[in-house]
Image 1 (cartoon, rainbow, N blue to C red):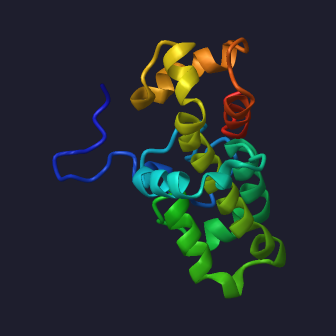
Image 2: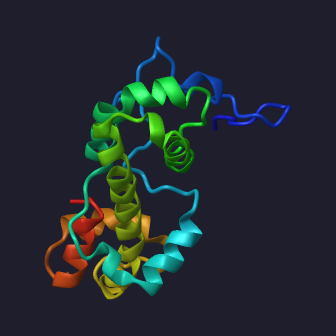
Image 3: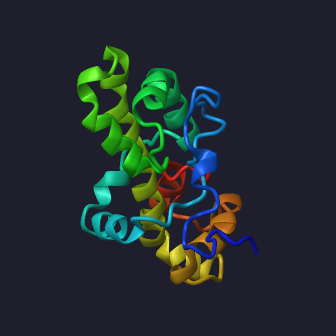
Length: 174
């Protein structure tokens, strides 16, 4: 198990992942993956339960979102957000604070990209609700551990409802 925190309670990776001219922002080194995000998940769960229509539309993959952000705002992130811990919320806040110096392309794209990331996260949370019956009956799993049932939902089409299949697709699992 990798230790993420040093004795002085600071993350080991904090300084190694900051943006700089020597390490330009690309979709390959942007710190968002297709793994479910943990931070802010309680808020997203509440939103997803209260507004299940958030996941109704097709969502953009994390890779596509970050690629678009890197292409549109890479220079602005390096110039204005150096030293910012590169999670999506802090990066969005930094770009919002520096709106007046953003290029027109970046200004047009960055809010849409962060919105797409939030929709994908919300869609992943919605899978547990949309596939509740299938997780228990078809996959023999628990709705409290949806991530363990995802491979079953993806590989099995027999006995899976259309709503569940759509939720799995919107979440980007298939």
